[in-house]
Length: 309
Ligand SMILES: O=P(O)(O)OC[C@@]1(O)O[C@H](CO)[C@@H](O)[C@@H]1O
Image (tube, rainbow, N blue to C red; front, side):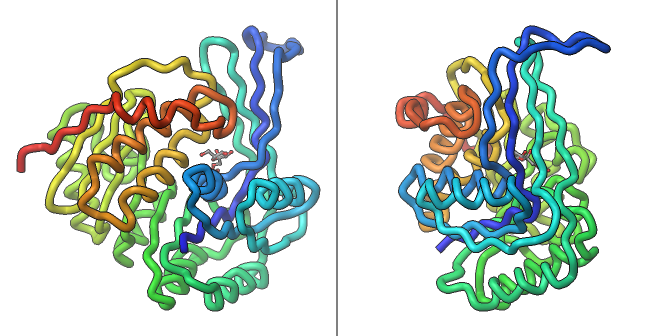
């Protein structure tokens, strides 16, 4: 069974308007409020593929209650750790031309809250794979993520990391099964700007050198991705354009789709990449995750090639 951990969940407020005007109020054309956070998005996307998972995380106040209730309404299993405060609201604004995101810090957690989470990990049934995604809340212990990985690995679970922080580099020594950086995060972590296959090769090799087993490197709006298992590298490219509505949950859904195909069939990289990019593209065409209505059709329009060794 997959477990996901969203240490810092969020209600996403997605707003569209006809341009922002400095020092003036503008009225939005539409606003939606959706339960989110990176690991939760992975659980929601799994559910759309008929895959069950258990969503873990720290939740607080009315927003935390909303997320947990909506998660269960979607048919996802959820084991919340309740903390004081209010789970954050993150604002995403589309002014017709650009997307803007304002990500708030979230409800602080205590060492007791962390212990409660470790206890859940120590006793969780069928913990095969833990997907740890997103930022950590204020006041988390410095070694919080190290301990999360240790507790999961002590149970024999694989660990997948989708973290933008520099902490990812420290955790590499624990040999995570897979990481999913985008090209911006890869540049920040390894100092390599990725414009060509050779740039990707260099950055991917650096990730493997420090202990990471597999890397799914997404290239954002370019509609492409690399996957490397340390022996071979594949490159996938979408062959169609999309009408962008919100790219916010696209990366998380891409990861869920990839894991869904690849986790139990590690040779099936080509199909996993096709489903991953198709899902990310379709999710970017709606607010939140959308209905995955075009995923099957889009999967047929992704080109995949293996890079020469
Ligand atoms: O602050 P984090 O955890 O890095 O990112 C939070 C967040 O941007 O990630 C999701 C999209 O990936 C959104 O639903 C959510 O608001």
